[in-house]
Each structure stands twice: as structure tokens, then as C-alpha cells.
Length: 504
Ligand code: MCA
Ligand code: AMP
Image (cartoon, rainbow, N blue to C red; front, top):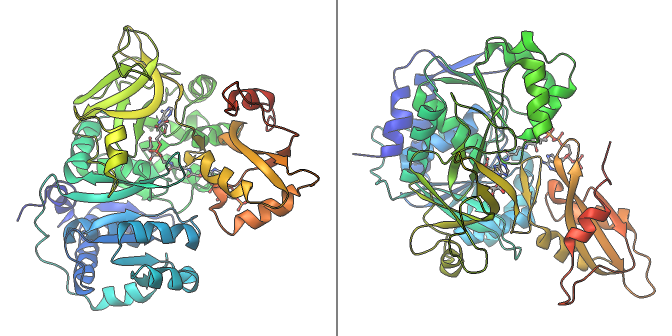
């Protein structure tokens, strides 16, 4: 029975005795062994009663078993819903309830905290730890591997990935088999991945970048990956000599450059360095070339659209641009107010259409209608222009979003929490330049009349409720927020005023 994503990505692993995963301890997992693990995972999901189309929520540490959950879900026809391991139980509750997840897999260490949440959402909770232990791991040991993957069509959902909303409510981006497969096909071709490639995989596997861009591309190319549990720089440096390629957020590249061991010798056999998820500074691009002789290839994508543009493999990789549209992706630059196309070369809203573009937000028809036009163009919220050579320049964001180290933080969510804090009248949360993370979260608070809020105490309290990467790195107290004549907080004024806050 057809299951296009399985047929293209996972079926070729079957019978392959060469490594698919290289592990930091020197071990390897062959394609065939990984395929068998996926088939057993799919069998376990079925034995747990999951039907094609059901949602499987996963909040586990990165490991080969964790990656096989994705393969198992594809084989069982189950919709894969990966969650950031930094999310607190309170945050997880929203995703389980919204997605109506049938099963959640979590590390054993979190099981107690998650149990009441899962019970409230009528989601079955099982455990799977990075060392391969836990109740799901035990069930896996007893399971019959599925012989035949579930039949799926190109338009069936493969994954549900949540992206935060400007109003604070996260939206589940529905990604179909076609979305994922078409993008993987384009990336293999455009970036020239082959079975000789070994990707140094140091990204998390709960986001598009590490899960789809990296994993799907290497699967389709029949290459292999060095799977690192954490983006630890020492481990990355140790394994670079065995790799041919690296995909990273800009923080990977600035951290490598900060390390005196990183130089030409270490990367002599590397073929390709790719950067995305956040803007790569032109100075990083230049410093990287000076140090290694390699020009980083920068590309641009989103959870909702997979990859949209990429600098060319053979042509000029231009610093400060994200390259031309990928084959099969149409771009439009439109007026933010009217939606009409702007003149060539002008700045406007970047819109995207193609097989890569998602099917809409899970059970949010009004949000889908607001961002996905009837003509198929998705309104990205990114502002940019296309130059005379077709290269896209991202110049800013219309959406109020902070990207720190490649993670997205929606200020509204943090502001709502700060506004509730003791002694706070109101707040504004902004992103300001940060030497390691690109941008970091800064909270600006205004005291309630006669109050003297305690920034450290406020941050301590917040930390139990929201993922730590969303927490302001600092809180500053000012007497009042700058506002325009309409009463809107002028975040640009705040960003200018505090732009050197985290300067080295
Ligand atoms: C960790 N911390 C962070 C971040 N990461 N704070 C802000 N922003 C972050 N990105 C916090 C931790 O909570 C901790 O706080 C402290 O910083 C140190 O954490 P540590 O674990 O040591 O950090 P790390 O492991 O060195 O990770 C930093 C990192 C990582 C390498 C930048 O965040 C990362 O792998 N980012 C990649 C994210 C990604 O894959 N993005 C793709 C999504 P405390 O000390 O208080 O506990 S976007 C996407 O998929 C689209 C489609 C695209 O285009 O790619
Ligand atoms: P996410 O919602 O996590 O998928 O993040 C997508 C957002 O990351 C995009 O809308 C952009 O704002 C940003 N992004 C991704 N790649 C790049 C890049 N190369 N340069 C600038 N911004 C990027």
C-alpha cells in the first residue's frame, strides 16, 4: 500500500547494512537496524490503539530511539507532534488538549509532573528515556514490527508542529506528506546531497530544521548522520573531521569561530556548511570564510512552509541574503496594508506559494484564512525585497517575534506573564542584539504606583511556568513605556535605547 513519505525516506533503509547513524561513543546503527526499530515502533503504536491520523505527542531527549519515533509514526500513519524539551508541563497541557493527542511519550524523569496534565487531556502517557528505557521501551521489546506501512496519500497529515502566535496562543501547523517530501526532494538536488554525505547533526529534532531539513534530506539522499544529543562545541569539534556537511543556526557558527581549535585543518574534507532559522550576520559569513575558506550557504524557511529560498550551491553565496526562491516555490512581495504586489526591488511582505506550504492551522480556520490566502500564498510575516538577481533580502519582521539562538519567542506571551507579576503595572518584551544568541529577550517593566518590583524574584517565579529559553535574560525597570499618538508602545524606541544591553 502506498505511503509516499515512507516509500521515499524510510523504505530504502531496509536491508542497508552500512551506517545510517554514527553515535558519539563510536557505535553505529545501520540503515536496516534503524528501519527495524521504526517498524517495531509503528507496531507498538498500533498495539497502543493508535489509528492513522491520530496524534502522537513526543517530548523526549534526542536519541536514535527518539528519531525512530518519527519513522514509526510515518509507518503507522500517525501524525507526529514533537515538542520542545524545554516546555513546562503547563505549556505541554495546551498542546495535548489542542491537538487531542492520543498518546504522549516523555522522558521518565518528567513522568510525574506530566501525569496529571496528560490525565486532564485524556492523553495516555508513556515513557521513553534517552538510554532506551521506560514503559514505551518495554512495550517496544514485546511489539510485533508492522510488516506493511499504513496507506497514506500525499495530502494526508504527517506532522503537526506548533508555532507561537502573536496573541500568545500557539497554532498547530498541519504538514502533509507532500509538503515534507517535495521539500526534501528539492533540497537534496539543490544542495547536492548524495550517499557519500555524512551530516554532523547537532540540532534538536523537535523543529523543522533538525527534523525535516536535516533528517529527511539525508534519508532521501541515502547518506548518514552523526547524531549528537547536544550542540556541545567540544563534541562538534571532535566529530567535524568525520563529517562532510553541517546544518546549523547562526549561533553554531559564532561559537565555532570563538574556538581557537576551529580552522582549516578541521574542515578540510567538509563539503557544505548551511545556516538558517535566524539571520546570519554578514560579519560572521566573512569571518567564517577567512578562517576556513568555506562560504556558508544561508537559506530561509518557516515551520509553515519548510524551506523557501536558498543561496546557490554553485553560484554566488551572498552574505546578508537568503538567496533566490527554491525550484517550485513562488515568492511575492506585497504591500503590508493592501496586499498588492509592490514594485520590483521594493520592500514588502514576503509571501510564499508551492507544494512546500502547509495545509493550514489545526482547527483554527480563522487564523488559517488570515495567513493563507485563497490563492495559495502564505503571508510569512517577514519583510523583505528581491534584488535584480532574484536574491531575497530579509530586512525585518512585521510579526512581533524574537529569535534567540534559533528559538522563537513571542513577546506577547511573556508580557502577559510579566503584567501579572507583583508590583508591575505593565511591560514590554523586546529582542536586542546578543553576541551568542543573535538576539536575546529583554523585559522592560513599569512599576505599579508606589511599588518597587523585584526583577530577580519575578524571573524566578516565571521560570516554573514557561520554558527557560523564553525568559528575559534581564529585566529593566523604567518609569513609563514610550507610546505613539495612538497609544501603541514604541518597541523600536526601546530596542534603540537598550541595543547595547548585552554587548560584550
Ligand atoms: C538554550 N537557552 C536558550 C536557548 N537555548 N536561551 C535562549 N535562546 C536559546 N536558543 C538557555 C537554556 O535554557 C539555559 O538557561 C541556557 O540558555 C544554557 O542552555 P544550554 O542548554 O547550555 O544551551 P545550548 O545547549 O548551548 O543551546 C543553545 C543553542 C540551542 C545551540 C543555540 O538553543 C539550539 O540548538 N538552537 C537551535 C534551535 C533550532 O533548531 N531552531 C530551529 C527552529 P538556564 O541556564 O537558565 O537553564 S526554526 C525552524 O525550524 C525553521 C523552519 C528554520 O528556518 O529552520
Ligand atoms: P519558525 O516559526 O520557527 O519556523 O521560524 C521561522 C522564522 O525564522 C521565519 O519567519 C524568519 O523570520 C526566521 N528565519 C528563518 N531562516 C532565516 C534566515 N536565514 N534569515 C532570517 N530569518 C530567518
